[in-house]
Length: 414
Image (cartoon, rainbow, N blue to C red):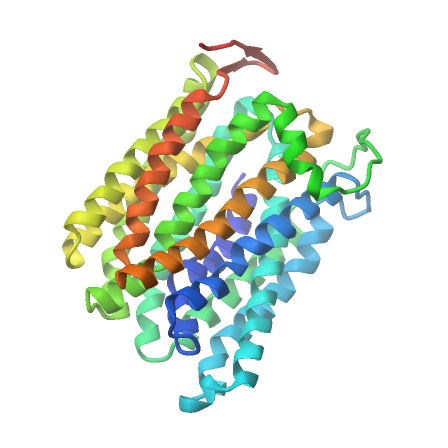
């Protein structure tokens, strides 16, 4: 559990850059909010093109290195290179040179590499967790994963992002070092079960994903809840750093100081929260934890929309946001895999990820257009609030599954 949590913590530093540094870096090259959102949306484009295929392909990969690890061994080094290149771009293209077509082409290329190979990792992580831990221990394993991610966020907010006031490259350099640490863990510590499992030999047909989900009520309902979570995140996170630094006039160091308390609060609750997920899941079903997280997200976005006006109120909003995300993060892996046979974990995760990531891509474009239309980053928070409310309803619509020992005990609800 600890090794996999540390592995994920290193890659989470890249995700941190996605939400907190990348919009600031890309704003040097693109001023229009809609075009900026198009470039940032490549993250979600990669998620529904790359992650589902990698998850599906890894179900059918059998090597002496394992099923999932070969993808990590390829994806992590290229991710580190792309992160380094992204951090160097503002220095390579100073001043007016950033507006040249050549500079924009390089930015687009580096951003695509940045996102695509990061998505190779995220396409592997969920199936790898499901392979490594039985259902009744999955909540605890995920709590270690979330704790590692929150520790990374605390470190980056408290110690690293403020360095960007001196040179924007510094946070990227720190992330590169952390990714290389994750690669070390994959090479020398992570081991996979080498047992072969029977899988279908069907071709990868991404267009049929929607039809497959439509044919299975359980997959369809879980996909709706997971999709709402991705859309909510895409809407809130896309411009939060620009909202703080431009609308509220905060420095990057002030932004990091205000934001660090959210992951700290989440860290306090995730380890006991993992045991709570297992306990509640065994008795009532994990869907109630996810629904509660969506409710908190709705209230948090309402507070952000109407009351956040400086560092203190941003800190309060971010604390509640991270608590709501902890509920979502702890419940989503057990929610997805509670219905799925072992041999099909990668394929089914791919189906659900295709749906949620494609929706995230569309949401990012919509957010860019809304912010451009209203000339206010708060428009993204209003959209996130509505989506979170719909997500709570979607989570409550899923079928309750209680599990004990190694067997699921399923119950229909309403």
